[in-house]
Length: 294
Image (cartoon, rainbow, N blue to C red; front, side, top):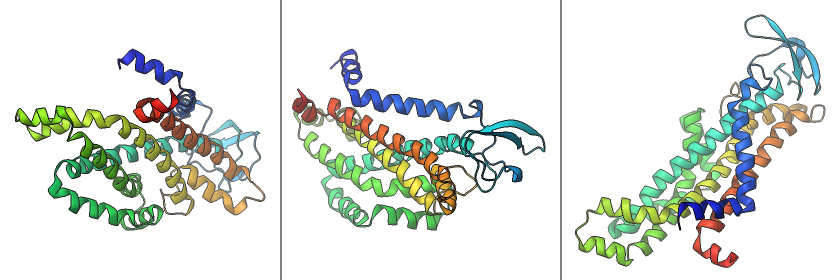
């Protein structure tokens, strides 16, 4: 399939259009946060504690000056602007989803190719992966964050590690079938080096399922990061994340429900958009699903 035909099929899929559109909007919000009427998300104003949504007032900046500011989503019990924190939190959530997916695909894809192509490594690697899969993902993530400390890279590692066995098993199953294909046997007959076979012949044929799996991992990572932050085990409280905002707002949920609902209104469409994008890519790139839809 040429690139033009593939692009047409991708654009014709409604799930891909919706998911990519929402995701593109969120990326724009994350990049343009400083220019969307926000203030420093860490700045606190004791005179603007628990203001209502839409309140117009003066916001004290960190340098001692103040500016006229509209609290579109109100403020929290520390006098911080919820609107600013939610918009800046978009950056953290998208970065965690992206980095987690890339890390899981790189490590899991490499281990999966080694396990599928080298039979001597298969038993050892897959038994280790089975052991990791026996541990509930959220509990493993909590244990890793507790052991490594709460930083962006440690949260990414903690969320990526439980996903690696799933990627490894997926790639292994693909390689087990691909290694018996005539084009791979022909490459081996021509004494092609093993790294070249894996890189040029096997990996390109496994890319489509890997891309689809990567979208599901990204969606799961965004949700898991919010759960960890909500439990107080994610990123530090001074870093604005949707989970941190909801965790801080839950104490006053009955009086100020917006402190929890506003970040949730961003979290839900983000996870939904990435999952829909993955479903659409699976329908287009996976031959089995493509034939079923034909």
